[in-house]
Length: 222
Image (tube, rainbow, N blue to C red):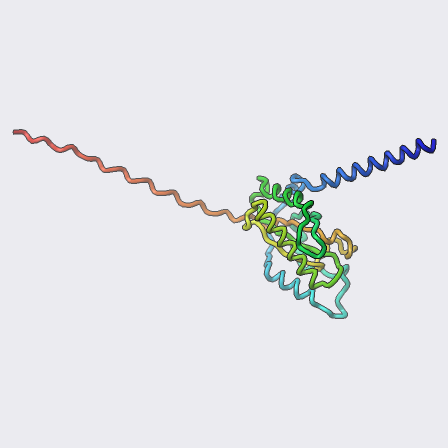
């Protein structure tokens, strides 16, 4: 009986692990991304250069009255109201180098972006870092990682650069403030931010002028 119970327990655990592995493998799909990002309604007033500067300046604050990470106000609350897809991208430690196993995930993001439902939109790639280390360094690293995803989408998967922007928020807008050092705070966000500007169609070429009719020469009578 003990052997049977143990065998059943091991079999159940193996099945659970297999199911979990399958769920993780299927966690990021093109259709999931499309559904999340296709809920766009209104574009925010977003000044990216100003947001980047503000993020860098806040990360340098050394005041004793500065609240701990879990109590800091979001630095860009307007982004929290937009359609977003949070995704785990694996990077080499303390670098913006994307690990090879994450290229498939980035490829699925690219597949979603060229889906007919998302073609009319532009996107913001947001980098985050958990509250470990120096705040200022975390902002820089998160920006470099967001830039890396943007560059892979544009250069490897041929997504138009006109549809992509990037910003790094470091630990200034934690994805899970209740757990400031948790891995979830290292996720990359893909956010729908605006309708893509449609390029005006070139004016039609003027129709070629009809050739002038040539009249036959009159015959002279002798």
